[in-house]
Length: 297
Image 1 (spheres, helix red, strand yellow):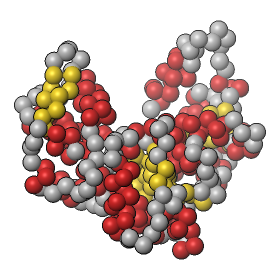
Image 2 (spheres, rainbow, N blue to C red; image 1 turned 90 degrees about the vertical axis):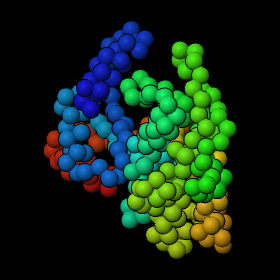
Image 3 (cartoon, rainbow, N blue to C red; image 1 turned 135 degrees about the horizontal axis):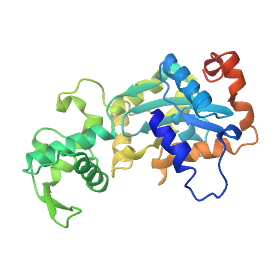
């Protein structure tokens, strides 16, 4: 990770069109971190950012909270499905409720791998890293979420659909293969993976909150992350939640820009006049490294 930061901070920023050299000593950094990060990892991250790169201060933001800010809300449930992990976080008045946060280690990358297997079953070879990117692009353009649970019979092959490859050739794949990858999130057991579906985790997460807050949370579910962009994701989520409890009122918010919700929320937060009161300075960290835990947990 340090090599990536070096490329971004010491090379990419310098080549971003600015004629003046950027001094990181004069800047604060807002960096995101998932709530399940280990204490030692956070401390090491801060040490590198302060000592190696020289930032004057840091703010460590939770992606779920920032994604909620992007929609103009401070209370709600953030369902964030990215490339590597799915995180469900009930948030009240800008603060996450730690005892209710749920994590699912199935996300976009797993869907890409499954589509890769589907393609290979149909006689194509897609093994290299560049070919994996082609599969990811195909997933984002063509995969969709089925309107209801698929069973084995519905997963049988049917009509083919075509995807144009970078070399101009076409890859043909059964339509059913384009629904299977997304079904991983809702029915992992169908693919031999132990665990609950994303809708069950979301329901359980809300049910772990105070009874007086549940109604508001069920009516303020905010989708974020690129892996919620699939056609039919939102309507399927509502249908599955109602299948668990048909008495609850459900409202789901899915902005067209939700792929970038975390960045948008971070931009909003960092431009607040009060942002300087939300950071930890290099001096504070040097005097007491535990301050990065006390301030954000």
